[in-house]
Length: 321
Ligand code: TUI
Image (cartoon, rainbow, N blue to C red; front, side, top):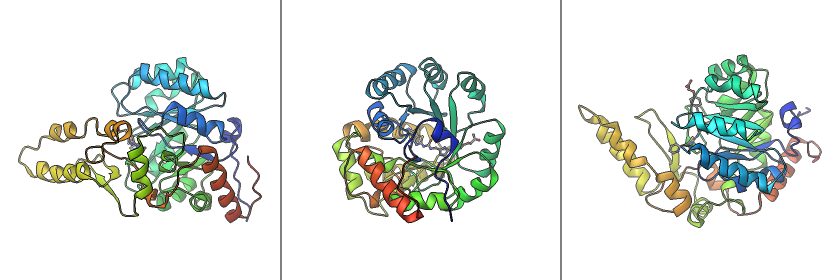
């Protein structure tokens, strides 16, 4: 069997490895994105609920560190997306990935600016719709991922999306080594996205407590919050996560549930995890693959080690793209 590990999008971007960085709010800084792009992957700056000016700062930081193309991930639930898209267009960012919603209202202006668009899709129907609207590729993200998640697993979502569309599919969720990358190709993907694996890269700027929590994590150490609210997010189990789930159950059993109480409880917890390393009060958004990650090393080594293993398993020469 021949595995095609090259796709036109990655070729156009001049990438060495078919591996992209997952969008990670606060953790996906300009420095980490630049390190991943510089090493031959595709880095993404995570922007979450940020204002445009903060996004611009990180884009400029990445530009200072690399001449290679990198992307910005836009979280569509944010109230500030209009200004974030304005900044992305002004700064001529090469690629936009979107998460947590339907990017249709913004597609035409991104195409007009020559920006590649790669939305995260949690379902076949959204993948089909995105292809019709002309996006360059889709990221099929399974619920093994950290942070905001859909309902399907990577194993079930990726082959169904790959059969449904003719554009490149990037597999995401639960990928942390060469076996995962090879598996993604076996499922019909043309690339892999990793988030959690890059959190322990040397260039990752998350608090040391965050890194050590990942390095110590076991297979069953994550929990999904927001199941009842319909806004599911995977985080490491800690005091915050457990009490959030408990409050969610209590609140929604009330006659007049007050969702604002829960929203307030969650507010700022991701930043507290990433920047302050608040072990009990922070929301450590990581994927189920955390239990596999046992070392901190440069992004360049993560990429080359993973690609060496993946290409060996796929029986292809370890030549880069
Ligand atoms: O977006 C993510 N993961 C994220 S975003 C995020 S930001 C945050 N910050 C603080 C607190 C809470 C969240 C953290 N993690 N992944 C991509 C993703 N997109 N997963 C699921 C989806 C998705 C869901 C529905 C994409 C499209 C969609 O469409 C529904 C529609 O509108 O048609």
